[in-house]
Image (cartoon, rainbow, N blue to C red; front, top):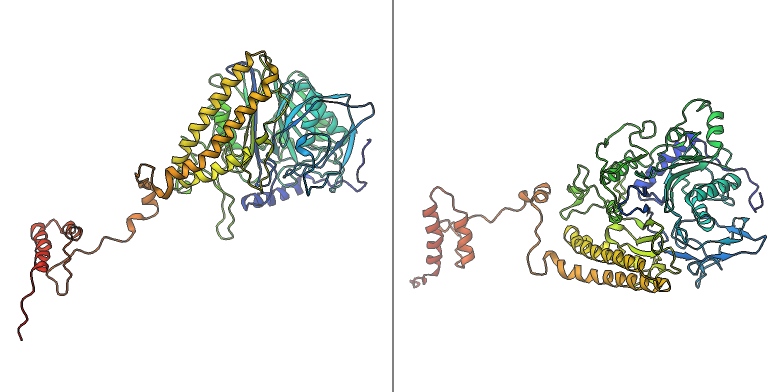
Length: 613
């Protein structure tokens, strides 16, 4: 292996120890500690989509320090004998700082260049592509969406306590540089991982990884984890039938592998050899990849399964249970399923914005959602109260969401990209034939608010909308729908145009319009809903169910009735006081009481008798 690496013993975590480490990860996650990405991915075969495209998506559900920049990497030619550097992936801002790869990564004042942890042989030509935390789409429409998974083996990177060189971050990028098809991309990644060693960046909850890997003709589910030695990899891929959809959310889903069906399955020899050596499988028996190599759901029960159930529900696959015992042992949900109706592009946007509305798991309902139906549950730390929150598909800590529309017609495949949480973001289109990123989408330092940043525009809107969530989000969704409709119309117009040279200009113009409109939204929201009133001065009262839940009915009572006949009783004569006095009169003897209220006022108004000396 021709790369620089440490000579120390590999840091391999066997399955029993890793299970204990995973429990610590759950505690960190619930307490708001730093963890790796916990993402949701979707795939739609070309005969399951309404327009014949292959769809695949990815939400990067990271923590607050993630790098949300969208970056363009140009095509390049490389001299014979060149080496491609591999960098350690920290998955925070900035991803890395290097020269000569993309304008995104050129050093800024105060930044230090990253040093490679190793090298692999370079190829003569590499393709152009877009990337965020992971590779997204190249010029041939090969595209990817990532989700971290648990695995029974874990290891670390070269220079960081292990011997493995490549992570899913680097594998996804290299595959887009070198592959013209999804099938080829899987083989590139599998070969590199076996040769140079694979490590999972999420050292606690995610030692393994999964990708949706697609092109205009087909899409695959790809799973990978380190081998027991920490110097290779175990991987498998399953083709999604053309008329099916698939969901992966932080846990393996591939079940029995048909080792004879090379059209539907690709895999490493280590899938069989490791399982056989460990006594987990024998030749001639079915091999369930998830049951064998997954370590199950991390963080908490339903962390993965609820999202699978929710996404399939939105796809129209509604006959699935929402409860189970062990998702790893029992195949509760299908690997793939046929949707109820053809899937539209915006259906994927909707799934990534889903809080289970309209189901018994609706996160906009209940006391936890508050009076304004806020579905987000922020990181919670308590040494007294033990528990956990439901994990929705949409979540406040998403750094980016991407949907790829892989197709052959028109301008080719289209990347739809939304920075920050999709609930308050807007998907903008970019063509596989484009050669730049609109400027606001390359600015996303999570620790420095910038009015020039698309990421910060959406983050700002999302947080301002919290003041009256159920009301303010109606305004946000109206702008989303309008701008995304305009984006689709723009794609259709450019598909029919012969002016390929204007793609960058046209998409940049639309992207800037999106950013401008979203920067105008916070002022609109504050102006419209400030201080608990609508802008027409209508009070936006708390809902009755919430008033009852918080004990509003047990609050301070009205003042006692004004009794003019009692000694020392005050007899104010303003209308409001008389009205309060009358309102407090009992039904029995009401007339006499009301007369006393009015009479007391009259007596108080009469002139005082002269003082007799």
